[in-house]
Image (tube, helix red, strand yellow):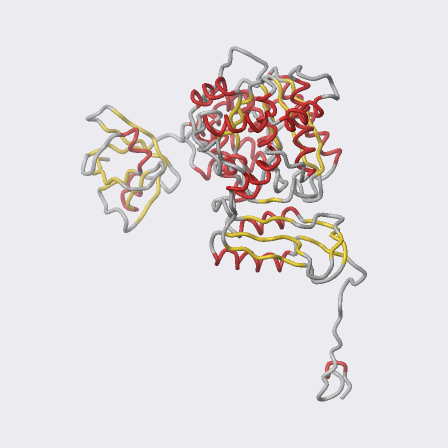
Length: 518
């Protein structure tokens, strides 16, 4: 069928057909057609959307990404034919049925994801099928290798190359801002590619953006790492394991982090940057992704097993996850807190100690310290000022202001202090609720949004004492976050009084009529 082109300013792949043209071709929404630009000798197969009004009969709407390959202009004539569906859809259906996928089948799925041969809904089907029918260790390895093979890789000629990762789920887990400069200051290379927040109040890349740009190519990351020893960049701006970000995008609406895909996601990026040793942080707690120590040990062993298959030494730390790391949650607040420690502050202790433990594991794996002595070496590097000096070098090489200090970083201009309404002790902080409140306030997109916790578990409070301060860059967001905070009550303060049941007496008419007495 010959159709006239109309370019559609939608930054995606796909084509738009009038319902009657789609009916003539025998295609439905989600089916694929091949579009042929005979003049340029170019063609592409893409999925179809239909309309009865946006495109007139006899024309075809070409989306922006599709036209990057097709190279047509408004009014051009193109040939449109029915195209075959990708064979990877059969493999996804196979996984939906609970069957195991081969190395070749997973490789085909990943390749089609990378080359945009699968629609978002089809990628979602793969995500959900792997969530319901868990990937086994062989499938995880296949997914990991396929992710690496379809993207760019870093190649360093010195070693060992070090990396670290936290599986997330704990607010305020900004340890990368201490671990990376400590490792680099020890003379090791650590090309840290990080993610943006999916469900949290700030991914490491979101936080680093407070200090410097984070979007660089793989070759730029390699050069910067070789020059100063480390970087903290956004992995999504590279072509390193490109299928991963497309998969994560489809996981986001469901707020799921399927274990097999998570392991493949993490290990693919470590493998792609050439890591020889990896220190893993697995927070464990009631409100974490991992709820128990046995569950954490099982996950740790899976990371270690995949690492061995890929030639990487992996060691995992199960860490306490029932409270935020430090007191700050949200990009600017967290960066300010981390920089303050690099500058010489010795609290919050939870942030200092956790960073030292994770950095210490990496130093031991890399041969810089004997087993059991890594954390002490990490603390020495931190307290000596070497880590601060190295962090300034990292900020500078990424295009930021190396003269920045913690005092120069300001949170959002709108704030409100949540105070204790009774005397008692803080007995619990609900991480998920804290994250929800911070996100409602605008984090991570609004860098100044978030919250600062004044009272952590075990703190004795008097009535009117501050529990946490909420920050926002926009007043309406602060008000909305306060509404959510009053509903969720993320910090539980417990005293002798558990609840108060008011007397229902109507002082004008006597007893409350509901009890049958006048």
